[in-house]
Amino acid sequence: MSSVQEKVSRLKKNIEQVIFGKSETIEFAITCLLAKGHLLIEDVPGVGKTSLAHCLANSLHLDFKRIQFTNDLLPADITGVSIYDQEEKCFHFQKGPLFANIVLADEINRSTPRTQSALLEAMNEKQVSADNNTYNLEEPFMVIATQNLIESQGTYPLPESQLDRFMFYVSMGYPSQDEERRLLQEQSTRPDPASIQPVLEKEEVLKLQTLVDSVNIEPVLTDYILNIISATRENPNLALGVSPRGGLIFQRAIRARALVCGRDYCTPDDVKHLAIPVLCHRVIPQSHNLSHKRRFADTATIIHQILEQVAVPV
Image (tube, rainbow, N blue to C red; front, side, top):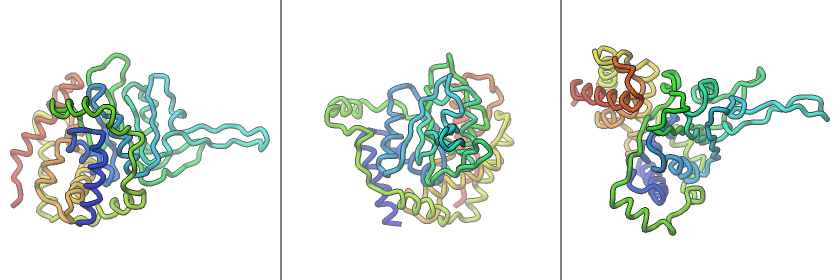
């Protein structure tokens, strides 16, 4: 576990060369990757969402592709397209940008639902189907999607089925005044996100992902997770609670967080620390006609109240 913690610490420090004052968000991104999940970052423009994705990929020497989602983007622009070869008189499948280790889906809610749905199979099954053929995606595979918080014109909100594929829903927020001062002062010397040096290799990432499965969760902690999930289904303020798939994703994220902290066992603090970023986008409030921004603020508050009500195992 000490070697695991040393690797994670090295990775965090490397990313923090570029992303100042966002230690928790960086930890969420690393945890999500080790848990084989996908990350949705929603915030105002210019706070470092895209830079975080660049830094994570380059720090791990992984293949990185960026897709700028627009309303005229088609599914084939993401997955790939078959091109006819006149010499061989047959079609050849040209892989799209989805065939990478880390895929940045920038401003994902600007594309139409048809294009958004092109990600579903890749995110859930780690494969792409095209022209009656199935192509496996190389591991590790992670989608980091971004969307702006305040813009609503020309956007298509992600449906519940798409939201449920994301393990984490996080917001970066503005840096503190001290961190922003440092950002201004070090503008000329701060490394470019696309050029920072790798500190881990792909094989080490795959090894860490494998270790997540060996992290122990005591039965009493499993009951604690189940009680929280059941509380979301019974809460009068929620129209929809956490699904069984959401429970499985929650447990895997908890295991990964324990590993990131250098432990081979989980604690109640792991559960409480991840409950809001993992569960808040998997539930729907009764007043589901609320604005997008208000919805997630309300669900985060409800999840926090549930955590205070459910007994913590000792």
